[in-house]
Image 1 (cartoon, rainbow, N blue to C red):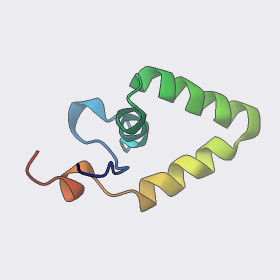
Image 2: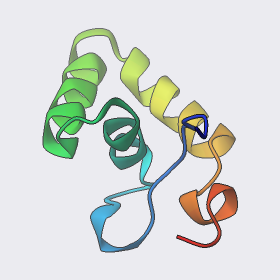
Image 3: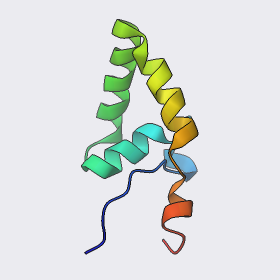
Length: 69
């Protein structure tokens, strides 16, 4: 069994950098819910912006991790 990896999504489903889509796929959740939670984190604590930027820079793209998919 292959270990799950966290990544950024690509293509038409990725809104900005694909961070929320990748997190949603990792936790098997709806990407819209993840995006709403991320916006709430940004509005309430402003830490959401810094975390999103860090994830966008650190997380690899899906095609890098799973090149054959």
